[in-house]
Image: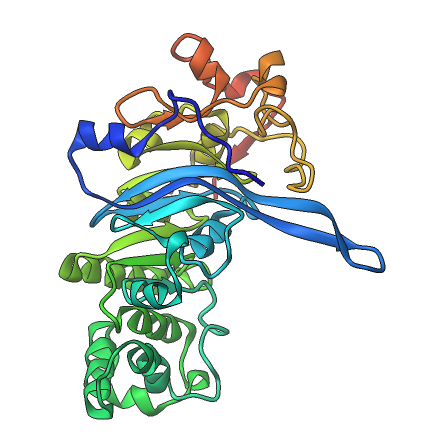
Length: 364
């Protein structure tokens, strides 16, 4: 499947660099990841699950880029494909001026020292038969020539950085709580001193108090080591607190990208507006109208034509069903893929909850 070329008006990294003069560390260009569906006696490919379909974005050095969307929209697949934990169908990922998909096995091994991941599940991401100190030092054994004492010193340093003790290195994963295991996962990701870390929902499996501790650790480490994060999450409040810029995905597509403050104050895409309306407000006396979308998310096996959100969008019109909107910059790095924004007047893409057949839902 050949990679589809975007039109000239689509957001490009070169335009962004010219406007902001920031250094782009990671540039994802037209990323596609399809999974084959096999059937029949010979297990031939009968269809493709379009998990990620022509996604483009960039991440500046030292920033946190939040990636949000409903379950199944392709967020985790994007993160794993960027790291080549999954092979891509097409597209390019340029990290530190090198195309990751063009690297041979030796160059990729060297690149992995600079790119790490914190997995979502702290319970299954650690080997239950291996002391956590060995799990943390495993990358050091593969990628460096440090001796056992030097590796142990790094393990102790990383455990201390995440608020744990040196003697924890000799314990097994089952001896720790969920929050402690996630700290160990962070220590493992930091052991090689990477430049870029994919945080794949690192706090979703933790309770609220532990979430705050882990997020504070990630923020402190970012400031100390100059780390760059791709922060994948469902919790929009956490993303607002932690991210510098935010991208919104729907059914394998990037529909909106903007600075955090701009996106939360002025969401332009109708899907983003619906997500924002679901953020709880800490006021038990407040009643407000939420944007309740009708219908289910379509299957990525057979995504709808045109804009993929048109089957649930209360503002969709004929063009939305026929043509796919490009991701364009409408307001100083506020990128949106929506025909309502492209063809209409300011405010045409805003959903009025009062005009929808939705009930007033109290916030709890």
